[in-house]
Image (spheres, rainbow, N blue to C red):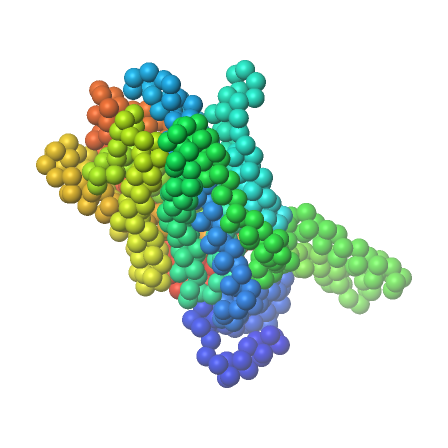
Length: 569
């Protein structure tokens, strides 16, 4: 028996290992039996199992400490900041209507034209899509924390630049400049999705990994509420001057955007001093690419030739007729395994279907997640917080809309996040996602086929169903589509694969805001929303179906979820 297994047996006497460690130990005993017959394959198996055991030990020894608290704080603040930056634009767009279209005639007064409104709202989503793909890939190649810090610095610089947007030259009005800066802001924000997920998943232990990932992501809910709270405070400070001269709102929207850089600046030092997880460093140290392999084989060949030259014979002695074959075979015996490339790994259906499952599920969710917000103005009106955009004082109109947004988020969105946090380790990721998609399919069908009837007969019933839909978005696929890709892919591809999944989600957001937003007024104002809700129900059912392609990761070590042996050939 090899020395490593003797050491493991001694440790078994001292403490009972976890189930995943037991399976690794069993595999190591099998590898020892094979090793008795010799062979490079057995050596490779033993080395692989040793690495798996060492990584399992990381899970067993993980515990709360200052480094973990620092990482979780940085990651949580990142999503609070991202949500603030993404959703504050809805309030800013409302303010821009008063600033730049106060003198417009009729229904166009105090309202940003649809083309500019769509442009500034879609900018961050497009930037996120690009950032998730590019920064996600760099996270695997360069390092998690290096790219993570770079993304934050991009976000801080572009947030400040967005706050100073103005018309520059003919053809480049404030909306185009704001679009450019928010596109770049989205690129920086996009890095947070794959890198936050991988950093937390690789640092947390098996038993609380899902809870910590969900908790970090749930800070999005606080960011959604923080944006209208900050807006109300700033508006209250400028209320008298705004009512005297509406152009003073020009200061307000710039301050609202500028405040978005404060959370990032406050955690920048911690981001810059973060280190990559031991798991990521360990896997990188042991990974062997095809180019490395050829170098290793060449080195072994040169070593063999040097030994033959030192003995003064290039061929075996006559009394050992089989020695030449043995000597020539040595390079093949020590031939190490080659690591599969990203394309090789995902060219196999059993791996590709997992990536497709996480990507299509996220795409389906975000089509409805961003599309359902088309109804927020209706809900705000139903709870009595809407006003007359032309008759009301500007400060009063905007503040009441902000209060309405806070109420909507508190009714369903924020509770849904934290229900997921406290149940994800009990129910499991896949079960919560299936439950959420199923509930949303039913709720959207009800709203879609009885939309006008419910609104006409009971606004309270509409508010209840709408809030229930928001609850199951977050106690459901909105949280799990973030958590699952951070667990079900190998460490070498985790950030890249998560970035692809998240980018598909942003593609759904772009489709909702850039496509469906243009359809809702077919036949009259908000007349086509019922049809859109029916379409959203189909997307929810699609998300439900593809979830069956995704493995359950609850209670499993990362190396157990995606067997590391699948990465080699």
